[in-house]
Amino acid sequence: MLIRYKKSFKKIAMGLLSYMPQEKELRTLRETIECYENNDERQLYLWKIEEDIVGVVGVAIGVKNVEILHIAVNPSYRDEGIGTEMIAEVTKAYPDKDVVPGAETTPFYEKCTKEAGKGCRL
Ligand SMILES: CC(C)(COP(=O)(O)OP(=O)(O)OC[C@H]1O[C@@H](n2cnc3c(N)ncnc32)[C@H](O)[C@@H]1OP(=O)(O)O)[C@@H](O)C(=O)NCCC(=O)NCCS
Image (cartoon, rainbow, N blue to C red):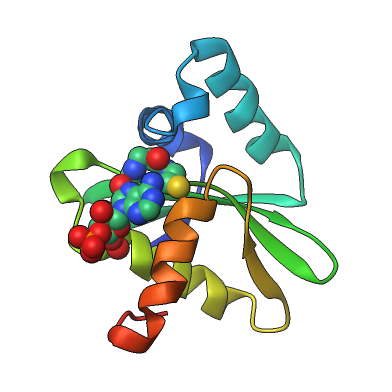
């Protein structure tokens, strides 16, 4: 289930974001999370399974587009379709906008969209 970020999830969100290659430094990670907390055009979502938060997806909301800036899943839960489902749920959350990948999420986004004809849930 996709849920909106709130400050009580800060540590777990930072832990998940740190799986992104460009978010390895603590200073960068802090700036990233503050950007999501303080900017109305940014929104962070978490993926919850029962009581566990196992994924994160962050977007920049533009006039026409929603750009996926960050996406990461806890390694213990990878290859179960969660990354794909998070993109599908973000797409559903913004029906009037085009969801597009950002520079750091393009490889996975493109893999998902290529799979779309082969039973991928996008
Ligand atoms: C990318 C990521 C979110 C995918 O999450 P997931 O829940 O495992 O995704 P799904 O189960 O829906 O899809 C798994 C498929 O995506 C592929 N995949 C994983 N990372 C990928 C990447 N960076 N680029 C392209 N494909 C990728 C897997 O090899 C797998 O392929 P297969 O179905 O052919 O075996 C996860 O691997 C992750 O957190 N990676 C580290 C963070 C990161 O690099 N994010 C940016 C990705 S561009």
